[in-house]
Image (cartoon, rainbow, N blue to C red; front, side):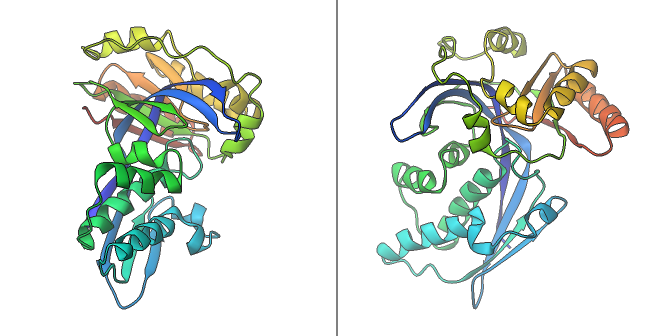
Length: 292
């Protein structure tokens, strides 16, 4: 069965710089993707089907299939393919859910992006880059960046993307306190939408981890404070990562997942093992980022 990984998205920095008249907030974010992710697979079948399985599947047990971003991505792409004369027949899709739901690391958006890419191959329908990005944006502001799946600077509502040179991997520990948090609630609690933009990125990208860390220390996640007000356990996650030796710990996206950057894969794995022992109710995993 053809399959595609849907990598977790990490907002290393996220600045909220304004708000449009339609209510959407304007952002600047440095985004990376990890080796950790969900897996979407699909095969032609007599009728459409969607099976959700895997260690995080139970969180979606009460969701109607038509609400799942995978099913919505299937339908959006089919509509576009049929308009171009492609058959786009029924498919049975399996989603191996490995990322926690509503956790600020782009699980649903990554699943939608992987579904678009996978079914485009299966149906032999290949919209150009801009057309695919427009389809992704119909599904959510984070889907275009997940379609890119590489280090990038995201602006606007997340649709204006600039590839960023990152010729090395970061070793991370991702933790989530198993508390879902709704993105609209976090933005509603944001006291100020007019914040300074990100510092200028180096013209040639980041040469090594130390240069990136120095830059990141000048940045922030503007959603971290309002998210902590909604889910105080975020503070516990950040404290735990710092206590475990993270060089930098921060919340990703609108939370509640947090990440710590560590000095190498062994340090990250040891920190994850320690947190798994001391915080058995949390989602804890060591992973690394995908380089440019």
